[in-house]
Length: 144
Image (spheres, rainbow, N blue to C red):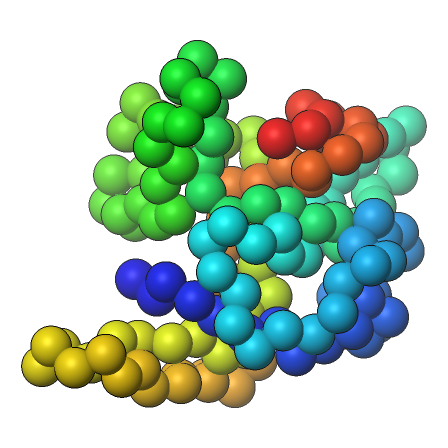
């Protein structure tokens, strides 16, 4: 799994690309090196009063569970074959799904060099389990 990725879009471009109506990512600036410690945009769809909304929010990268100790692990990826049954990911996978705009990502070379290759599949997005850094709308769980 990649350890860094790119989001070259502004908040307005993300709103248009994902047909989203709201954004709490107004401060987002395009980045060509989003690291696990960086807040980055996610796209969430939620329902309130039978109306479906799609928002662009900022979220930090890494799953932080409420029961985890401060400074404890915050995994940045999960295996597709076990995400629905793994105790750490089961609940977020069931109720906190999101899209992560990721039109490019870096893969480190396997030969031990500290070089990376930028891979950019056309219109690529990544599935995620996410909730925004601030605010509480729809069925979201607030800060996280």
